[in-house]
Image 1 (tube, rainbow, N blue to C red):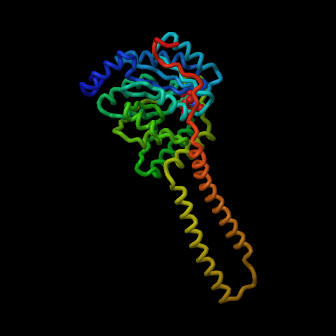
Image 2: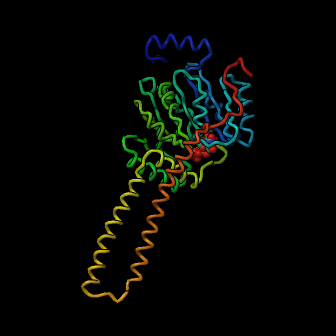
Image 3: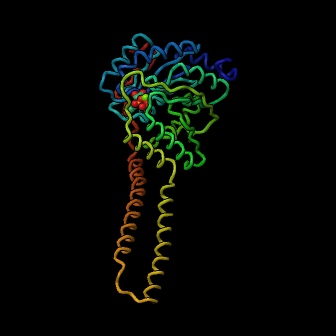
Length: 335
Ligand code: UDP
Ligand code: MG
């Protein structure tokens, strides 16, 4: 199959290749990945060279402290396809990804992949093949999760199911990470979403476009250590839920309605009982129970409102999503 879809595309592609714009960009967020990057680059280059189109790889150094940027510069010296985008500090994977997508020049498609070789670069040709068949977004879906604890697997599973239930028309494909290919059109659409609270999986899904899944086996990390822990995963899940649905606010309303209805019935019963049988001032336990229960419900509800309020606060500040410390674009003529 040809790389392009129609003849006019082919012309513009040829022109772009002459002017040095690659057809494919690979965006790789990297935070303290110095140990794996050379192996990653080697496997990636072997795969990309065989695609038969100009490509570049944008390494986003997300404020690493282990010399990741120096490693990338070393790789760049041997391969002009390498670009380095070093952020001024650690902004987190979601911001690093956005930075990489902002600076990816690939005119046909952009591939997002982790640096730790958990997403095998060898899957990329399958992603590209599905894209050539017409899919605008091709996501790699895990068939297995080798090297992850059952607890992580169970929590991930639960999260996808919950999100699937509450996110309405936006469908989050289960068992997919950020490893995917997006057409230039899909990337441009995605880049129009500039919210500060970025739940990338959700943003990818929100953009839409015809999508396809390609199954693969997730490998254990090649080297280095995971940057995730359960605190971060909990934060990410909250992010996912609060940036895609206001359902918790509605649940708070239901809770309020429910307790009000209960209070009405209970209050009626207390009055009726006092009228019929008189009242010898008992009721301290029931009073305590009701007061504590209501207090708890109110605090939870306030917390839910606070989550949304905090996010509104962060969005209104209008700060940039990331700050670039240093940018060395791909291409032989530079550096
Ligand atoms: N990452 C990043 N910034 C961060 C944390 C992670 O750019 O603050 C990158 C990391 O280098 C890796 C990818 O995001 O390429 C996935 O991270 P990790 O492997 O730690 O997550 P896991 O695969 O365990 O979910
Ligand atoms: Mg990983």
